[in-house]
Length: 187
Image 1 (cartoon, rainbow, N blue to C red):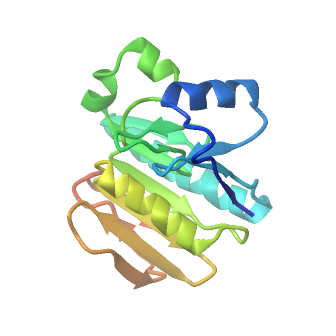
Image 2: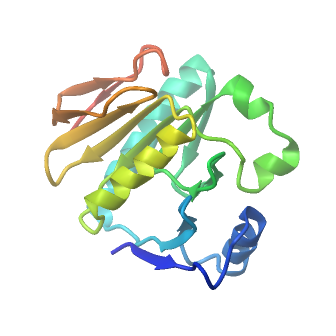
Image 3: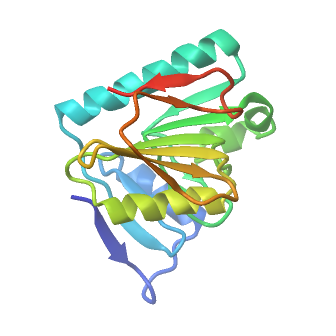
């Protein structure tokens, strides 16, 4: 179960403070919402972990063939421009955008919003919290995001400057012009 701790008004964590907190607690999966709520993420079971690994593999294979950008796992925290420090299950950033960062920015929590993310709802995830997280990505400049929800057999598609589209679990998803010619076959 994901846990949110509201630190206000007691503590105000800067991005650097949050980075240091994560460094001294490496075994604790943390995120920081743009509302300065410290989020303790739960670990996932075997089925969700396997599904997440398959998603990363699919995006990585496409990226290896096209070499258009960089793929990141759920262990990567992005310091979003709108103040959140978030870790999607799968993330992709266009090559030119990633290469514009300094070496130090790449080494720490990169101050950039991915172009594309996938969030996979595990049985322990609360849907509302994942939807809020997807909205944070959109507000930070996300171009395309998928919230795959096996529990409800749906996929929510988040696009910049558009309403969320909810599909009954489709056979395949197109990453449109964000990841050209990438199609995910949903299992």
